[in-house]
Image (cartoon, one colour):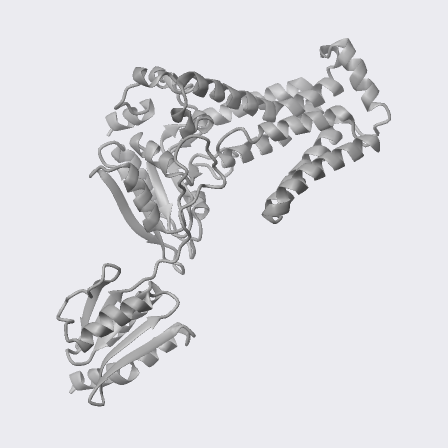
Length: 488
């Protein structure tokens, strides 16, 4: 008697209960097949998330031809048999699984003849094509970039690492979004302690939503209040492949092309995959340019403020006369000039990023030139300030990792304030504090200032200088990765 009641409940109220659970959405579709006036099959799906061609040609057609046997997947490479429930299974459990399957892009197919409910994968992949990453352009090397589809991103990594030791650990995070995450690593290269640490931090995340990898980054980073990133993100599959082969771990998040990589050290932010597509001497020269640009972006404005405010004796006489002539009539002190121009430069930069692509670049260039020239002619600032701010603004973009460039911008303002109040003594105190902070940082158990502190001699051959490839160990891992493997 209970079985007949359950059958009637499924036949009469199943679709209505699903509608109610989903809030009567406009894209919920129920299609039925009738034989001699009696309903035999009911197919329920969300029209916005499925491939209707698969449903028409491979699922419903299989029933009309009577080829849909017990536990058999539909005849389509795009679809897949997920799970089967009997009418005798608990109704609440059946409805719950059906609702979750519909939201994942599957269909719930009720077979009244065999008294079963089948959940079938008919998801339609809606994604943009593979393009070059807009935030990480390259001259020589692959021009492919990750997309918002996590399966496409998996394929781009597998394309470069055809190795059975490549592992993808899946988990879902976000109580409301149920976002799919993949922890990617090479089982034979990544230290077990590192894999456990990353897995533990990901498993400990408690949040309602994950819409981008930045959500995950904030949960698993080592220091919340440090200006320096302890892991990096990239849209380049070749960079992910190179880091995986160095024994690191990547975290892919469905819905975003940005893949997280850990651990990262301070000096690794000055290297790029493109360094290994150039000759060793060229790559070494470019790395030194990046290091010089880092110190220029951070220290040049503060040194200008300190020299013109407290230490005029350090400036050559002719240059001092020229600067004094430029500052004649300027009503503001040097620190205010620098801060004013830096803030205006940041505003113009952000406006250029948010404006439509066709006019954004023109606005940034024209706005900076016009405002700088107008401010000099109005006597609000000196011409030297425009040069200093322009140089630091340009050098800020030389470092290949955008998040690290943001750190430079924050440090620049801090050092300008120290220089304005305490001169070179303030800059020296700030530099000592900066080095102490870098030495105290860790990235997933790895000292952030490696290989300088602690010193690892073998890693210096690929930090400030990139040795020719024949001189590098073809199977070598970074020294700190080898140390982690020894400690397991």
